[in-house]
Length: 380
Image (cartoon, rainbow, N blue to C red; front, side):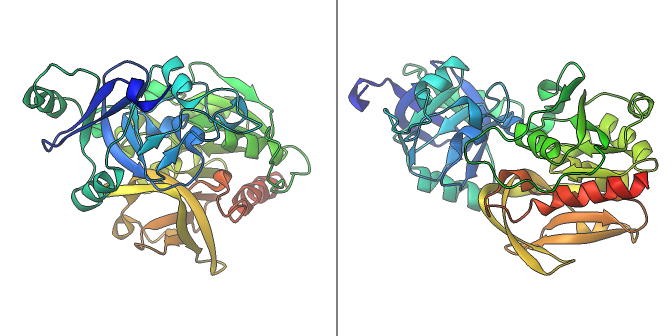
């Protein structure tokens, strides 16, 4: 389909800005909180990441969709973001792995997209003034002012517990390792297959794949699972996954984790990292525009090595709120935000970024091996 045949669409920001472009994907209206992602590739992983629920994603890479989509790169079974904003959506993919075109993929999952808008201007707007709510619509008759009011009356991401919208409804076993033809090296397999329970707050599949490749016996449980139910399973450790929204809302997860950290080794990634900070008395805050992309430099303060990391979070841990018993292990070299923690006495650690996403490409896979070592030490 050429661009002249595509329907007109509008992008409406809560600050009153209205941009005109072309619609692709689903013919539907959507409102989300606009965030920009600086990754040059990996749009399918972004689309299927549950952590984006409630958000409209703007991709700074100008040409999106050129290599299509395929099932191997999905991080979950559906698309969770509210909408997609790009400079130019490719109408024909060219890649031996491609099974579906981007626009068709969005339409299948009910997610609207808009292109032909100034994404550089929008990125600067978010960078300078912070994340804000936006509407994608193909409605060409409603006055701009009415659409702006509609956006301003919509809930913010912080107003909704998105974790309960994305978590699994049932407990299940996960035993699948890396599925792509471009598999990363295994982080290092455990000797005697420790059993772990993984809380699904919006877990990405590649995290579960990485845990399985490490030789762990993984059972995934819903976010509301109480600590007592986990302890009845007699696991050797617990994993706290990534997920969307404000960690302070997830009081049920914080309360469960408070019990579990006293009983078992615990590893947290992203939202799991933020939940652990609350467990030990720390606080989190909303960042101006967050970290969304595959090019964030992080230093491991324990080894002084620098990792290029993939990140997707709008909240961060306040370092001043952490107690003396918690040690900061990783920092972001761009803005000094907290990227990793460990408890000085308990076998508990966490990172803010995504080691499974491999943008470095394999700089951070050692973290899964570190978890395995904690589990093996606990079984000795």
